[in-house]
Image (cartoon, rainbow, N blue to C red):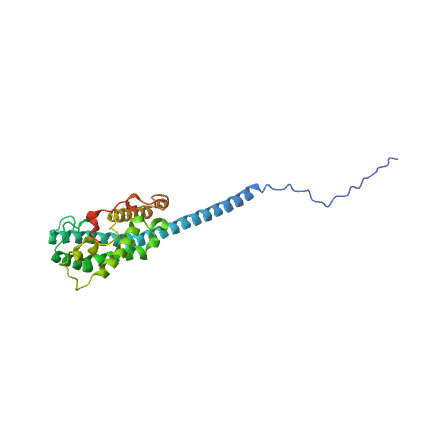
Length: 244
């Protein structure tokens, strides 16, 4: 008799293991999105920061033109025009007072000189001085140029001269008609008008560059040193009588 052996194989309840899916494309997509978002935010922040800085620079330049260099140019130009008008009406020539007092003006001319100084030149001088002193923070490099220092010193010294004038002064007395009795101790800075015009043109140019593009922040930066016309190394006796 043949014996038959049956082998009872238990069927396993375990499911066949699934192979892990490749998720790298999804991770790459997420990482790319994050990088793009960060880059976009960084670029946006940078652009906004640069544009804000550019606008602040434009506002400063506008204030320089409106409060400082614009008025200074107008006042200095008016002062020079008044000086030439005075020379024309008095026919006094280049020098109103000469340094050695060899050609003193007459009593009548000295009276005219003092009247113009009190009513025309000194008011303009005071406006020039106020524009410089009140807006010194707008100067490039936060420094007062030597030319401006000379002008302020000149105006202050002239105040002492005007204080010595009396309505009762006898101008027929030669001592009352000397240069020392009618002019300032400190002479008018020779290059003042050139300095003012130089700074005004530089400010106008910089504003144009800033308005044209944000790259203007890196162009035409204010000079780190004193511009040559503003050094005022020399004084001009031909111009000194304008405010002396």
